[in-house]
Image 1 (cartoon, rainbow, N blue to C red):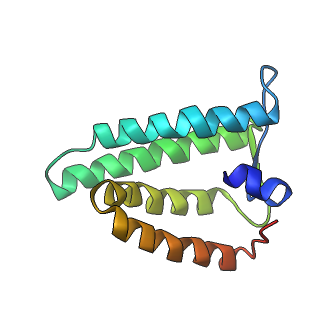
Image 2: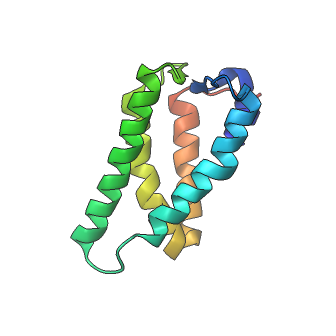
Length: 129
């Protein structure tokens, strides 16, 4: 939804390959890639052990950061409006624990998410079109 709501004022922009146009690229990412990644992340999350869970989260943050680094260096994604890879990694560090929280306590996760979204809108001077 973010990609379509923000259109020309995004923090990053995907650059499609020769098979897909921009809209198809965003839809594939939003409808297939992200939901499947979330399901895989949560399905493989260890049930017990703080350190096991922490390593699992760290692994997924590393995977996401590495994939984004590759996408940046191959021109598949570019940043706009002062966003950069460092901010994406910080976002991943917040996102994965929030997914765990949401799977267990969605009420708390929603409340925290409202605060996080408000902070990000303010910090990056996002104009909602």
